[in-house]
Image 1 (cartoon, one colour):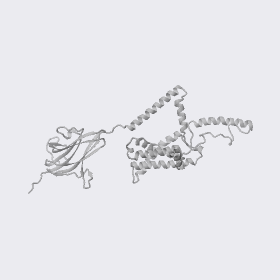
Image 2 (tube, one colour):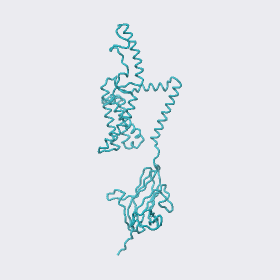
Image 3 (cartoon, helix red, strand yellow):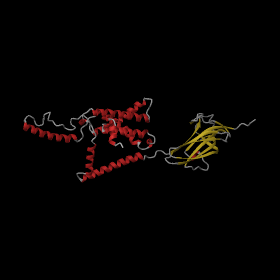
Image 4 (cartoon, rainbow, N blue to C red):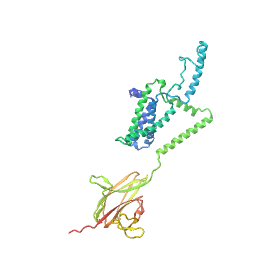
Length: 394
């Protein structure tokens, strides 16, 4: 059986020598692509945190790595290192004075000068890298989106993910090459072991009880913050709850469209329509759909006088009064959240005349009143048709 060491040696040398922080960037980019684009996985909550990391941190971090391959001065290295270096230099100077009498205190010879960690480095420290990573990512991501807007691909999920990933990986390659060109002692690296040692000492070997209490409080606050953010991501608050009903027609090629509705029918003859229902109630819901035909008269809402809306299309203050109603059909279905239902059916009106209204009423919960009307539900759809009587045969 091949062991892990052999598999590691099979990898190309540039991959084996890739700095740990840049390798982590590559892994996170790959994970974000899988979470955003892979089937099934793209519907999990993982896509939210990984997507945020890809947009708000990784491009900037890789760009900073390419700009500053050198190690920077840490917040404490300069002070501690300078102090230690000064003491060592003083001792060396005293020894040189006693032995040769040529050196001046505070001005060591070039050959004997002690290197002060962090003082002579041109890079930036870890805190600055993190801050710049967020800031540059917030600047880079919109710029890449602006460029995509002027391409045939546009601002869509796949082009955005591919563009951000490609920019980040190119910056990783440039940053890795620039680090390899530096002497090992000048390269930036993430001091994981030092962080672990310092954190372990602060948490488990505090100098005073006050430090211990503060460490416990800090740990609890971090756990609570991470838990709150994780809960908000994994269990987002439900959005608006609603249902929808609509009527479609079928074209010759079988495509369903919200167009081409019949304007004139013959009493006793059927026309095929498709009623659709969408469930956005965030729960499994029973539905009842009632199809009505209504004879409607238009009246002036103030005087009650009849109004001919065809002859007076600009008439205002008009109300529709239902003078007769008949139930033509009734359907039932049960839908899960975000599920849709399309039902072809035949519409056969029995009333004749102008201004016959076909009404589809949707009742979430499945309970229908004894005499249903549009006032009984907030979900309805309707069509106006003229129904003429069938012509008698010869």
